[in-house]
Length: 345
Ligand SMILES: [Zn+2]
Image (tube, rainbow, N blue to C red; front, side, top):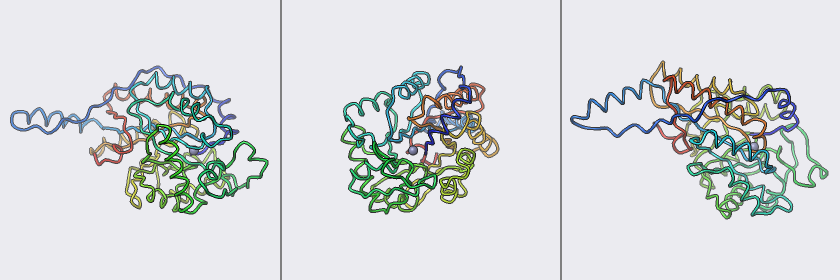
């Protein structure tokens, strides 16, 4: 994922907040184990009911940019979690908060913890932050950035490099940054991530090689570039995403990729897509299952921690729309983590 603060702020001032009215989604339970004998009829009836109603595995993801941990964004996330208490979130956490100049590790840890809940998945997100790469023992590269620029020393007084593609680095360099990031987050109680999303969705070849080296199982970087086309028009980032994820559409499903399971971010992130667009992805999955009943389909939507106060309302709007569809019997929804999203069923 990426942030373009100037653009997101400009857009934020133009768009009304999505107003949500719904409550938490009903959560579909797992299908019962197959019964035998006298229970067969009951089992097959419930199986038929399950297969008639399209089942959606919903991933709600949050990218933690490694920039700041402002109260306003954390409060927006707390409010979202209070309103939708059943939602499980896949957090792509970032170790760069700990390598900021003057960072207080306890404050960082406590800030992140405010918005985590049991049942969430804690994955990893990496942007090309200078201080993170240097703390990992890697020489920083200053460009070309997402926007085609090269950073200068003046850009880097606090930290810099958010917009430097990590795919510019070798796999050996990324091994170090991933290992440092995982170790740092584990040392502060966040476990050892097995899922990943690259900054700017740019999980190029060296990134994927390093993910395999470091024992990651799931990558969530594939994204339909069309969702980014408006905001990123004319920027190198758009061309890079297009080139990397050619063929990734809003209906893309998990697939094997070089020893990893690639779980497409098929509904992208809220800075780039409206509630209505997220619902279009959801409805597309439902339509597919209506026409050809089969295993549940995965829909992935989400937002960024650093712009939660601006954009989490879009995810809330989508949740409300999804709740309406579930209430109308059009679909069932399970909130899932990477492992469940990747499972065949
Ligand atoms: Zn990001």
